[in-house]
Length: 159
Picture (tube, rainbow, N blue to C red):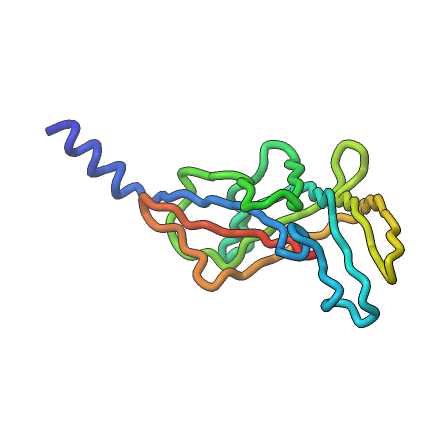
């Protein structure tokens, strides 16, 4: 009987889990075709790395829950989705939004993009690094962590 009562209490604890993943849209994973450019150029990436420094749920009072233990670098050029984190034991219920930050870490790079642009048969390669920090407040349609369940959020990176 003690075990049944303990399981009942855990089941009514009012907690669930929040799982976050990211991926690069098809333009990042597969390239940007000539049909997408007015001048007929095309682009392809061999690397498109982002440094995620924050992933948090935000409640109606602006309080953040969740978080990364350390910055996470993800190359979203590789087919995804890519796991960012799973936060267990967060309060069940509806959240106003999810907050993500892509920001510099280590060498000062937040986004590192390597690839090539081809126009009229001439290819130009590029290796760009950006050090700007950007915060994204995303409002998924129904960001609700169920009791004893998992809600998932996907951060889509556009190129």
